[in-house]
Image 1 (cartoon, rainbow, N blue to C red):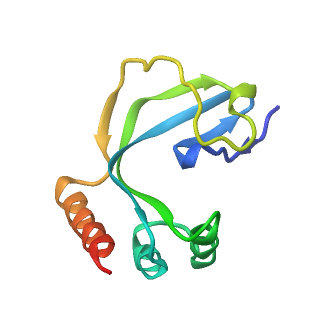
Image 2: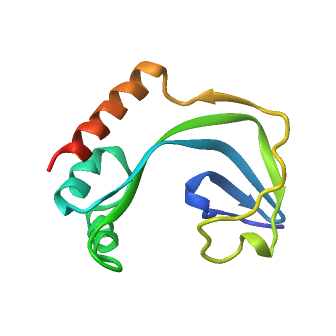
Length: 128
């Protein structure tokens, strides 16, 4: 009997249950850039889940600066279930996935909410 545990892959994999991985969400990058101001990184606090301490640590990792992205998240249906394996273990930024199955995607936020958050992101990263 296997226990549920959290998985990596930037939070897009919702759960690992023994030999399978369930993917429930898809994230599409709308804008990506590098910021060189800790003040800007800290001002983005309302738009992500990282603690202020983690933001400071990552900002200073390998020189000052941070790569940031604004994404749109979609819920996928049906849930995409993959066989767990060695290729997913450890700390990975990228993994090769099999071809996508037939699925539908529904935006988690409506267009109005997404546009409002994107404008907030754009305003923060444009300030100096």
